Image (cartoon, rainbow, N blue to C red):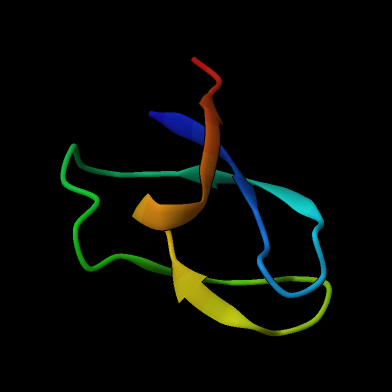
Length: 48
């Protein structure tokens, strides 16, 4: 599943492709500012 995430620090949107259905404990690092955050708490929408 592909999700659109928003970085809590800089506010930029990024795509995240999850390999499995479980998002608990997954983290993403922002490609713009380098801030790491939990995926589940910052999902804007499901893309496909």
